[in-house]
Image (cartoon, rainbow, N blue to C red; front, side, top):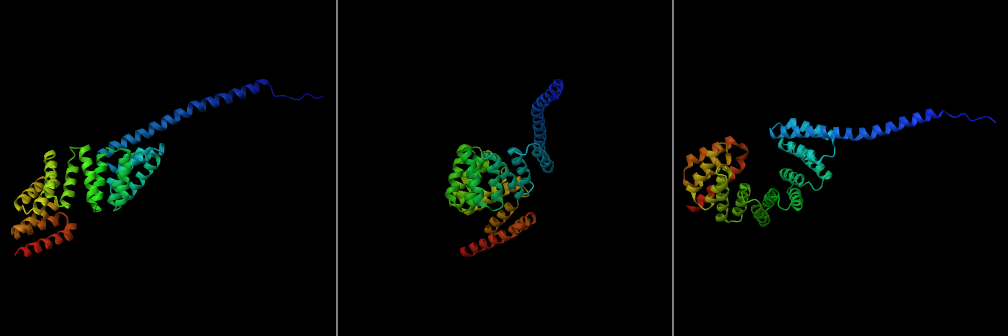
Length: 297
């Protein structure tokens, strides 16, 4: 009987030994490779954040792009790239990034909040409100989301809903000048001029250089026919921000009511010089003012 030829035992052992070493190397190398990839992602992400803070939005986006190549499931990187795109005016791109961040991490309140801002800016008030609502469910004390949902509700004409949101925002963040200013807008819209002025007073007390609050308080005083008080507020707003087009337009209206047509025309001209897009609104306000003046005669 022929003997069956067998491979030398030493060869089998050598191959097994090599296979064993290969497995060990793979087990050791995989975590090292993953750690290296994570470090690369973090390096680009952190540099992107630095560039974002310095206003280098293109550089920031490039770094977030690189970070996402190394870690394509990093929700925070999508969120930050979305913010950079938002600040560049790329609202659709920002919404896409925020949406991807939410898909990866549905509990990232900041991504819901940011997408809500972008949606409101493109005119999707319902979508914005829905996103703010989700952000608030995740973090009930997120005053910025309450503030923005209040603004969106005001835009939709839901003044009571807006007041409820802004009241909560004030409780959670009693030193936020924007919240007082925005609640003042709602109170004025509801006809509560005294309450509106009180809110603007508080905003100015916290930040004496808040030009918009002075202008808005001037509007409320103008509604109360306090022409001198309103003009004083508009002048303070203009002193703080000489490029505040609406403040010139509003001061022009107050001067028109005072009978100072020359001063009013100068203000209207300066308003439109700074922001020509205000022309339709300003013309409508001037016509309304003239009708009110005619009714008094």
